[in-house]
Amino acid sequence: LSKCTAVSHNDSLINVIDTPGHADFGAEVERVMAMVDGAVLVVDANEGPMPQTKFVLAKAIARGFTPILVINKVDRPNATPDLAHSAVFDLLVSLDASDAQLDFPVLFASAREGWAVHDLDAASPRDSLIPLLDTILEHVPPPASPADRAKPFSMLVAMIERDPFLGRLVTGRVVTGAIAPNDAVNVLRGPSGGAPGKGRVTKIMAPRGVSRVAMDGAEAGDIALLAGIDANVGDTVAADGVTEALVAPVVDPPTVAVRFSVNDSPFKSKDGTVLTSKKLAEKLFLEAESNVSIRVEQSENRDSLEVHGRGELQLSILIEKLRREGYEFLVSPPRVLFKEDGKLEPFEEVIIEVDEEYAGAIIDKISQRMGETQDVSPLKGGRSKLKFLAPSRGLIGYRSIFMQDTRGTGVMYHTFSEYRPHVGPIGQSRNGVLVSMAEGKASEYALGPLEARGQMFIAPGDDVYAGMIFGENNRSEDLDCNPAKAKEVTNIRVVFVEAKSRLSPPRPLTLEAAIGYIQPDELIEVTPKRIRLRKAILDPKLRQAASKKRSKN
Image (cartoon, rainbow, N blue to C red; front, side, top):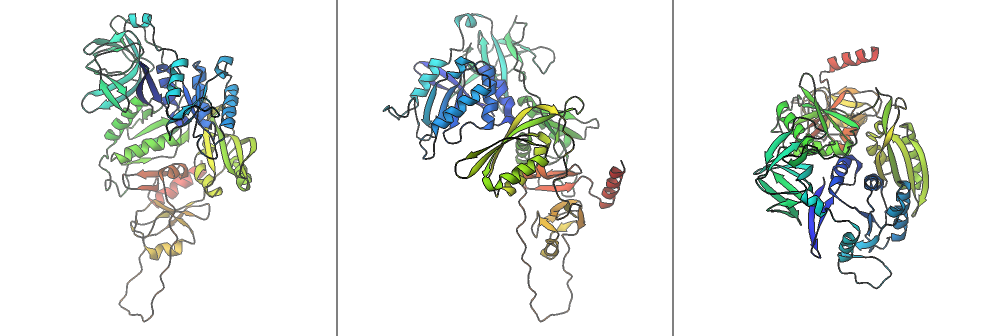
């Protein structure tokens, strides 16, 4: 998430906001753009600008900022700062930057060693980051004028968090006027809607370094945290008499949705401490308050909640956060959100760097997922750079396949591009699964013969229940079997030593892999200690009847 800090330099206070680079967290970038007057673009001297760089930089260019380019890691032996500089210039040209924006300042830096310089060839000392701070003061305009300070107080809320002692804290940039503790304010609603509210500021804080300090007041240009105000992201906090809200930045809509529901498996409540739908709903709605790119909708019968987000990464981080706090729940497969009754679907720009020997397989797999190959270019060291435009639903679950096809040597980035006409159905890309028929502990005696049927997700001694998925079948259909079957014990003595079977290691099942793996009739069981896959209908007879009904329809 975006984080604020401030540093002092030459009698000036420089407010700094660090934003995430991944497109799934684009709302973090969009909502803080109104708080800043400039941008520092940090690029790796070897890798150059990445796909995420294009997304974040496009937002800054649209705001009219001239970026300050910092090419980092120039101390590495494989650094190519000149190529990185040229790549950033080409990127700005592709984003329709103005002539003034193309004339951007450049610094070369090593963050690990703590220095920055304007020219690598010059004999300037490499001992501090003062050249970077001087460049910021020179090119970034001051945040407020005397006229702004004379106007009534107004602030646009950009972030929300909760403090165990102060309650809700709203963070934003003071646009006009000044504020002091115990001042009464109005809350003018933004995109969230609702009736205007009133409040009284109980405390004012400001970020300084890695901590926060209490302040006697804040004025135009300051980034402040106000306690005692009931406001949401995009709302305007203003003095009495102000009736017009500030313009809130437009946030791109979510593209992916998953459904959260209460865990109803036979192993429910064994690991988690927060189990009810009421507590789950309270937590998700609380997350939606502070993260404007997440939307939460409750079902009609109030037994599940649908969460809309920007991508698999954002949703997986939300799920991981909940499980670490003791929540236990079920998650449905992700589905893509269409526009205009399914006529338009989101497409993503995909950039892949792989060894040349794997390029053909990657192009073939993405083509099967309705992706279009836009560019293939060679790189140093026998590697290739591939560029695609693919539908978002075609990329769901592809990362694990990509890592297998490239033997873990490939690098893949993707970011939202645009909505385009629906390209039709995407074929089945996964085999069937091995589904448990019984409850108990998996035994080596049962898993040994089943290894010929497919790959296991569990090891001997793991708990299983009826309807739980414990492996992937070698064929396309699902297979019901008993992984908990134990060897029958008799009172007949034998004189020979039985040879023990050696099982292959099970495939590790991470949360990200599980989200992309499951099919529409399957669910992820998330607990603080375990991630399990299961069928939505646990009973095999009912599951078979539902499958026949779907095939008839």
